[in-house]
Amino acid sequence: MKTGSACDTADPGGWKYRSAPLLNLVLTVATILTLAVGVAKAQQPSAPEPQTGTIVGTVTANVGDEIVPGATVILQGTAPADRQTVTANDDGFFSFSGVKPGVPYHVNVVVKGFKDWDSPTVTLTPGQYVVLPTVRLQLAIVVTSVTAAVSTEQIATQQVEIEEKQRVLGFIPNFYVVYDEHPVPLTPKLKFRLAARTMTDPITILGSAFVAAIDQAGDTPNYGQGWAAYGQRFGANYANGLTDIMVGGAILPSLLHQDPRYYYKGTGTNKSRVLYALASPLRTKGDNGKWQPNYSGLGGYLASGAISNLYYPESNRGAGQVFSTFGVDIAADMANGVIQEFLLKKLTPSAKNQH
Image 1 (cartoon, rainbow, N blue to C red):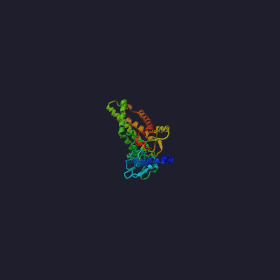
Image 2: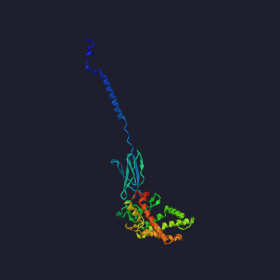
Image 3: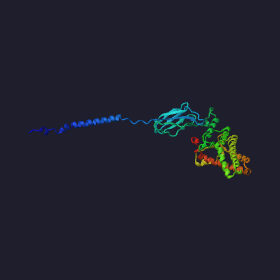
Image 4: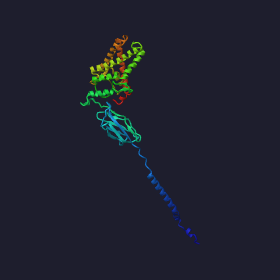
């Protein structure tokens, strides 16, 4: 019989046709899933770019805090694309927008006639608005380029104004030190101004009171004890400083054309700097810029010791006392020079960016 012969003689490849509906279903589902994933990815929002920030500031001169308009201000990041340049307006104000967060930047200020100014590293957080501390530019003083527009006396006055702000730990006067690489000579008026500024400073007066208390404890000079004796010791200590600084720091330097200030070296070997500092009481610069014997300083020590005979007790007077004080003053000046070379500049905030 041929019943069922159609099944028996079916094409061995007939499985393809029997499986086609299932295969088509699988392909259809796969296609739908692929399209859905593609649409989902297309519709998924991309991560937002970090919000940029802003840096602003104001440019002033270090002397008198006067506004400096027209300064070229450069913002420099780690890549050339991060660089921006603007010009400060008539009020010295500048602004950088679109500053990328997380990038370390430096702000550089350039103005003709002033030393370039560089900021510490500034790194913003997203959307941060940073106001830089007021930019205070220092004069770029070069003696050989002095013109009629700015006299040597004006430059010297500006130097003294800077020196009058020099304070160890922010409060102890450190006026008689030159950190500038190109100082100009002081006029007699400025020499007297610097001496008067030092002696009228409250810290100088407090220092005399402190030394008087130590002398009171040691019962020297021989004024005795009690408040009257302390007052005499205070007056003697203050008078010693006054005569020393007025004679050795103003009168004789004006007459002999010498500079009473200490010229900070800051370079060379430690040995050369120590020797330089130890020589400071014995030599100084003249107003002509050349080194010469320190007649002014040594004369101030002797004059101060001699004048002290007028107010010291009789038992503390005489030539021996004068020359003893003279030696002590020289030794103290040598020690001061060494301390100036290796320590005091680090402790004087306004001097750290000089030299």
